[in-house]
Image (cartoon, rainbow over all chains, first blue to last red; front, side):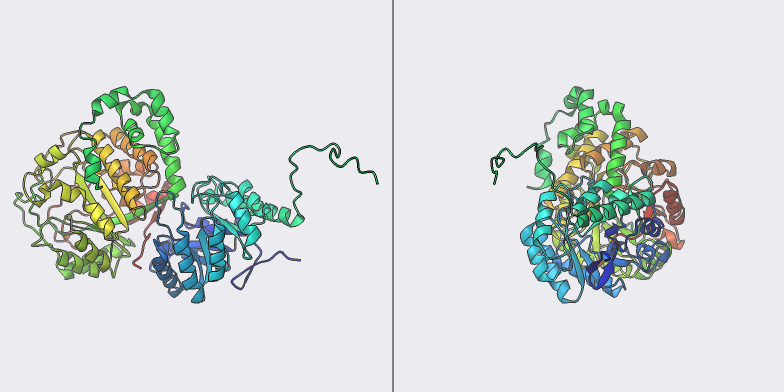
Length: 256
Length: 366
């Protein structure tokens, strides 16, 4: 049976989402998409330039991909909502990744404003994927607000520090009945695989691919890692034992 | 607490003594530190740190790529008016310079806007001299409303305004503020600004705070290098940036390290700031504030700018013109002579050739 990730009426076979902000040239985007197999590509609306096709980042996202505009630059829910509406009006479709960031030192999201923006945009028919600091209560509110998935950060955007919030993400995976997509912080393919092994529905990667020496090859590496991690999850990962066990010291006396 | 209060705490700080005590091992430790404090930054600005400039460069480059990607945002300045009532000893627009003054009419603003927009640029920085009579806020606002049709991001570099005036311009479409303190040393400031409203050191120093309170999205601060000891001026610029980022975390903060250029009036820089000095400043700042922007204008030469792409720069001007109406042909004298005269298309090509992407649009009016 095919392993399909269903979001917003789309059937996705790839579980790697691609960010686009840091490439040395937009021309790399279609190549990385091809090498990695990514089917969802996020683009900041602030960078979309419909008047200048040659430099328009959105024009480089292959037509078969889901174009997911994000609200980079929004400082509160109202701005995120305005950006999402502008994106839809500009022809970027009805998916939106909400980013509400009031902290330019670490680029950590404002969960409360993110919930508010999700409520408004989901009610307007957007497929809403909110970027958030992993927190169970916020994730529940996002689910109630109509989010299509929840996107907790593994560590701060662009930090390449890996799954520092692993235990909190694990709780979201266990408790939230929506796809959990790890967004931000994943610095290497092994970390993407780790997130997938844990049962994340997908991962979103930008910095680690875009700033690699060979972004296309790195895109391929991430694609493979996500596939491997997912396959391992589906195969049923054996629990890691904490100690070697030679016999049954506590229950060995039970003979009958 | 305003930045002025913070700055005063350094009133009797002995910089000479601090620099003398900086040790090589200390620099090495600071370069690999996760988060630098103000005095770490100062140590990186010391003469001693020059010996480890390559190590600083490697880390600064890595941090910049990590946080900003391989991209350089392009913008261009548009001078609206060179009427000025100030007497800044070092400026080509100073009131005593007997030159014909100009101010763009709305029609000329539109004409210049069309020419710039044809290059693909979407970020514009509008400038005026200080004259509340010739270029009042209402005039700036009128120009902004015209420019909004052509550009998606409008920054202003004008005389310091009151908070309500910033609010008015922000609601008209302005999203960025550039304002240079010129000199952070208060005594030197007084000397270089003998007359005119710009004499008010504190009103200028606190302008970025007022703009942030009014809801501005980006602020860019700086000291004009060449007017006073660059190491302490760079230090105070960094402190200013850090203060703004800490106080207004939602604002995107950046700095400019502008070096003095020849200008009408022939004021000679008081201090020579070498290429090595400029680079040391940029690198130290990048390590101090990894996510803050660094803006490099066409004051720097083409060759220098090409190198700075990999040394922490995040924004560059291109196709610049420092005179009022210079793009529509009827030229007048500029505020200063620019050094890198390459067109926008040439700059874009050069940035691509360095393995970086020239970004034309990174904001839009929402």
